[in-house]
Amino acid sequence: MGWRSEQFGASHEGRPVALLIDGSEPEPVHLDIGSGARVHKTSEWWVYDGTLGTQRAASVRGACSCGWRGRREYPIDWSCGDADVDPAGPYGDWQGHVDEVEGRSVPLPAGLEALLQQTEERLTALAEEAPLAALRAVALLEGATSRIARDAAGAVRADGLSWESVGQGLGLTEQEARARLGAYQQRP
Image 1: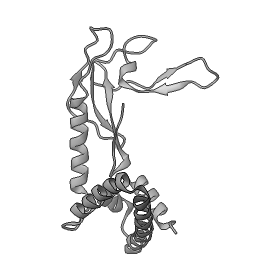
Image 2: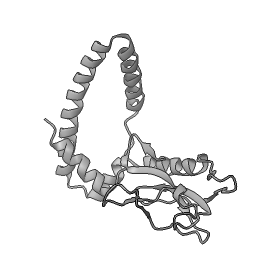
Image 3: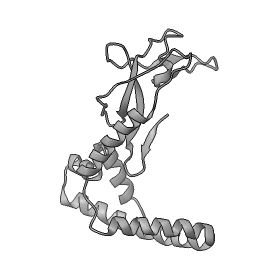
Image 4: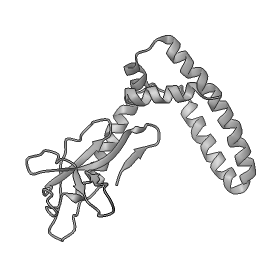
């Protein structure tokens, strides 16, 4: 079970992670599923149930692919046989982290966020009412966004900003910022 921020993509994918009784995160588990030489590796919180050689997790916390870890721990109730954890706690902590990332990123000009929301709502309605018209509108929008992305990425690189600054401004890791700007600059 994972959570994804549409705006920040792979830079901020969240999930609950297992914590042992001492508060540490266990190493990934290697599972031989018996279908060849490949052994599956996982660190999903629910595999740490004390069976198949795994350690038993005591709690979970929110985590993000960027390395962030939530401070609050949420106990796992193993008494019913299957693990029982309310995902709202870790998810809420992760969402707070994503909100902080958004707060540190470059703000959009006044009115632009509302205009983008209106455009999305109108295109969603158009897709139901007149799907061909919606596809035509999307094609025009894709062309415009490709040109704008290419030009903006070129301007950012010409400004000589560090990858750390670019990443923070976009709410991405440095690696993801490099990849995104590279992809934008390759657009036709």
